[in-house]
Amino acid sequence: MAEFRLESERLVLRSWRAEQDVAPFHAVCSDPEVMATLGPVMSRDEVAALIARMQGIEAEHGHCFWAMVRRTDDRLIGWCGAIRGSVGPIVGKAELGWRMATDCWGSGYATEAARMTLDWLFANRDDQAAYAITNVDNRASRAVMERIGMTYLEGGEFDHPKVPEGDPLRPHVTYHIARADWQGQ
Image 1 (cartoon, one colour):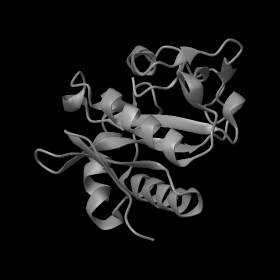
Image 2 (cartoon, rainbow, N blue to C red; image 1 turned 30 degrees about the horizontal axis):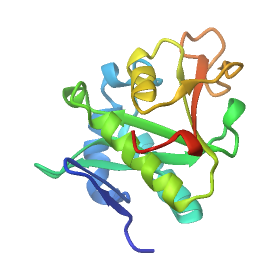
Image 3 (cartoon, rainbow, N blue to C red; image 1 turned 45 degrees about the vertical axis):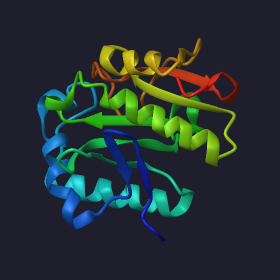
């Protein structure tokens, strides 16, 4: 399969390159500040397995949470893309997601990458809506969801089944945007 590549003025979303991407993505996923609303910090082996999982998802569906690379310095700064949801009210639906290095927060990269993903998704897949989930307290991700035009899904609250009971990261909310409402916001 040819490498996926989607470009904006500042970013590239591309297929994962396991050998070269493990170290920079591990730097993101082992940062306690990044993982504060996502789950425990990850070991290098866990990150390698996660990248392999994304490669498998891309091979099966043609999309995944792709590697997010900053064009000015070719630095892998995180991920963004879409997978098929596997939990709560979004099972089987298009789920947007992003994760980014802390020194890149506040730069608009997550919003830019999420917009690129929605443009691609609605141009290349027949999904009638896209969804995103996050911990109820993840204000930064919720703000990205709102900036790209997603709205809170009433009744979309759920306890994430992969997060232990009693963990403050367990309660999740769902946001969505319909194809008809997306206009490249």
